[in-house]
Amino acid sequence: QVQLVESGGGLVQPGGSLRLSCAASGSISSIYTMGWYRQAPGKRREGVAVISSGGITNYADSVKGRFTISRDNAKNTVDLQMNSLKPEDTAVYYCNVNAQAGWSGRADYWGQGTQVTVSS
Image 1 (tube, one colour):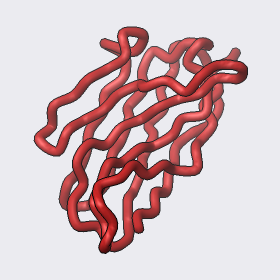
Image 2 (cartoon, helix red, strand yellow):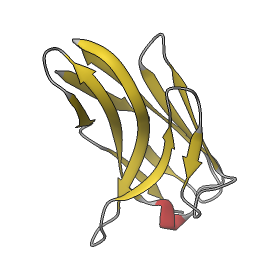
Image 3 (cartoon, one colour):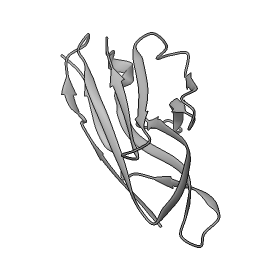
């Protein structure tokens, strides 16, 4: 199986920056896409940014130009650099990995979530 450990959330003022990190471990054979999702109170979980194994990225319109996703294939990590943060970015952020592990087929794995709060 795959375990995901997230770090980097916290409280930041509007206009500030935060960097989220996620490390995948376990009996991993291959990692395909890696990404970040978020869920605000009373709202559905939404995709924020994803990155393919080849480095192709895709962003939600609401974060384009402000957030940057990156990955280190050697370390099985994915980061999300968040700049120019807005109050509407406040949410629990979840790391997602699509991977093949052990005897399992390809599957999605989720981190435990990290809180990001943007407030003055």
